[in-house]
Amino acid sequence: MAVQVLIVDDQEPFRVAARLVVEATDGFEVAAEVETGEASIDAARELSPDLVLMDVNLPGISGLEATQRILAESTAKRPVVVLVLSTYEAAEYAPRAVEAGAASFIPKSEFTPDRLEEEWAAAAR
Image 1 (cartoon, helix red, strand yellow):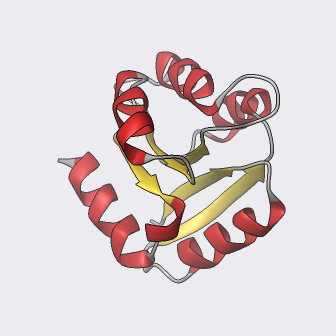
Image 2 (cartoon, one colour):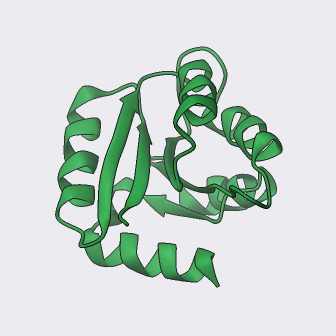
């Protein structure tokens, strides 16, 4: 069964790019795309994705706040992995993403099928 991925980003061009990366990665498929932190919490609750690709800067609550809330509702029976993606500096945001509970931080410029597979494998360990 394919890894179900929820894409969260307020910029349509990046959602399109992320969808292409997910679709180009064997064993992964897009479950849904949303534009806000609040919508990501609702979608995660409703769809129970395996993986959430979360932007940092979103309208409403931040991606880091949404990450914390999604993970707080995650269960041992149905765990979810969050990868935070951003154009912001990794030095500043990577520690904050991990503090929020994300499996890792990926600069958007480095988001490729290989990187997606690597991060998923590392999170699954």
